[in-house]
Image (cartoon, rainbow over all chains, first blue to last red; front, side, top):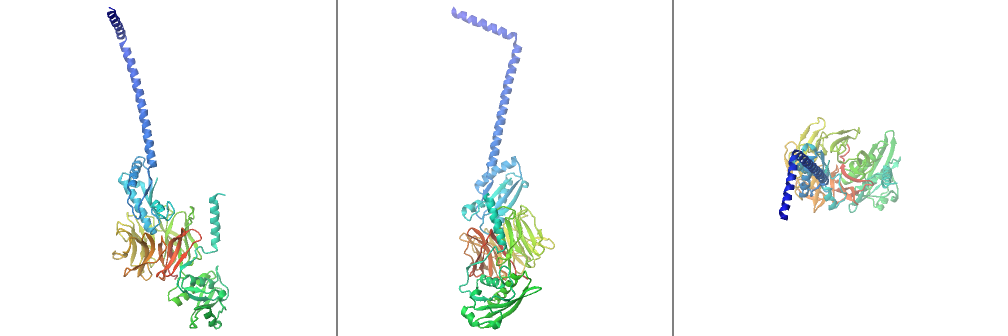
Length: 174
Length: 429
């Protein structure tokens, strides 16, 4: 008996609620829609903000990557072949240069050993190797200036292998 | 006072101090075993000096040749200036093999040195000569007399009247960090022809000694300049994209050979100075550089790595035919042809060390001349008996010299910066 009464109350209350709802159904629908819309817009704005934030972060990271990418590339004695680590760094440089395009100057250098004018030619060979790699990876050749200083501008002055290896280089300058 | 200012002050002091004294002096590192004793007796007549008296300049010239041991005037028993005053016994006691005596007179034109050379053993006069010059030409008179004495005894033309060019790096950034200097071959009368904050290299004399060509980076790129030593004017001869380097005057001074990479690879070109006509000489994807004319003006020797490593080649200007000259070792560069056209000198690597080597062109026989290391830029004396080159000593760039038979060796230390890129002048005309 108690149980059936309970069911009855519940049913009548449900009916009353339902009657109440049906009486202002349209207004209630609009309010709900507006709330949902606001909620969606807020979420969207938040998402956009997050996206922008992520983009900015990504861009900053990329810029940092561009800034931090090697700008000096080293070579073996009497060689103008790019080393593997130079290629990796130059790929990053090429992407950055394409995105944020700027003109650049490649300065080729040699160590002090051997003759000066041959070293001048060798420095140019090295700078050309860097230029060719950048051009192959989409950097406009018109943006690149190549100058060789041969052995005239050592990065480190000294007559030992450590200094020589630092002087056989190409410097990328923006 | 900051350290930099102190350094600046020291540099300035040294600079002014050096004005009175030659910046480069010559030290003999290996002479002949028994240099010939010679007495250059202080000359009679008027006194003529430029830093040193004429007889002192001559004694220094002869000592620096490596062949002679001049006797100090204080050790001489007498100072004769006429033949009748020579007592041969005295000179034999002193051990002198030759004596030079003479007189200096002065007129409105300048100084005249009348001088005589005697052989002590045979008691014979070998010659009597007169050399004249203006009042500012005391050193020219002395060097000309040294040349005559040297040639009469050795049968080799003397080089004491020749000059040299060199490049000096003061090592401190500034408007005159790099200097192109002209000096007498004994280092005296050094004169800065041009100075720049940017590198200078490859100075080259014209055959008439009136002009100098060199490479300057003053435009932030390499360019070849011509400097007229008579008028003091400068002219930029090349301004091409890429390399502009290694200028070399033709024996008739009408053309300049050099290297350009404007078409992609370093190639040799010649420029007709009068017509400005540019002619390409080589055509190869390898490095071709460092041209030097053979004495007949018909071909160039040059450095090329077309065979995989730098070697010296020769190209006929009319035929275009290329011939490889060097085969010993994996690095031979910057060749220079001897005045008789029969041999070349070059930078040669042996066991990883860079020396100057000499090679007979016909036989291909090679001889290493130097024991120093990091040797470069050989330049041959116009008499073909010696060469100057650049090397390192006490961590400083210095010039050094060696005879073509490697018997005589010299070092020319500098009081100031790093010295390099020597160019030995032709004989004065």
